[in-house]
Image (cartoon, rainbow, N blue to C red; front, top):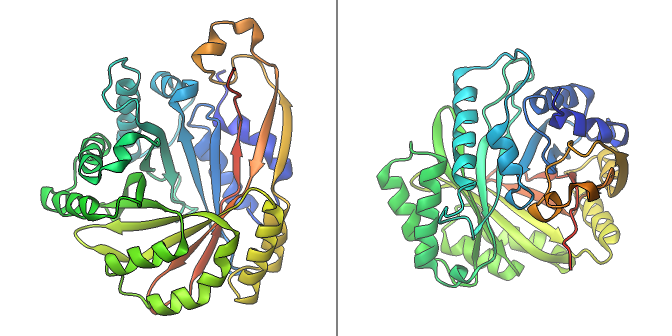
Length: 359
């Protein structure tokens, strides 16, 4: 039988704290992973509040190690309960990957990874949740011109989803064109709740001061002054921020700000930040301990056909390694803000298989 993503997760299960991911959610994630080929990078989206056990699941398709080819050719083995919406999205992902494998696909030089985000809202539904799709953009010279970037986003969104109204899209592109040039659009995506699509905008921002400026610029209706006063003192440990907002003709009041920590002294930064979250009542002591214990490596032995590999390695298949290191990495925390509601903290324990570049 073909290896599945569930086989990959089997390597990680002994290292996963039940305080961070309960067995019920891990079983649900395993059921989702049985329907996917082995993909090298993913994350568990974990709520840190003591009273919120929920965990969502994110996975990426990386074309630089030919995972778009694996997804294009993937045919699940066995009978699974699937609804029409899930089957339709699986076909959409496969069609995108078919296009991605074409040598002259015009977006290929600037597209990063295609992410599938599984929003696990109900553990009782037997069919897997329909994933939301996000596509990241590689750093490139087009980032300097927001007019060009708006056109790139337009072409990309048309491949991910065609249900958005022309009016919503045109309003969104106008906003992208007006963004400061220092504010980089890192990821774009489509979320669907109650069959209503919204555009997910993810901005990469290098200072907390500019995060505040962008919130003012986009007229976020929350208390920006209070947010700044409470959270700006925590910014010294961060190398970059991620600001995510949903747009359906106007921006949602709920936003997310990611704190990406400096990798030097990462353990110290995580320890201090999560202690602050505990002091604010946003993180349990048990989950903080599990977060701090996540980073590390797991070394496993696998058959050569288990993974996808880049072309340079496939040219010499006899050199495909049989022992592989899986990196466990947790380098950022996301805080959700919504007017008149307490903040919500999430951690993203990631797992990835590093593939070294040759000199």
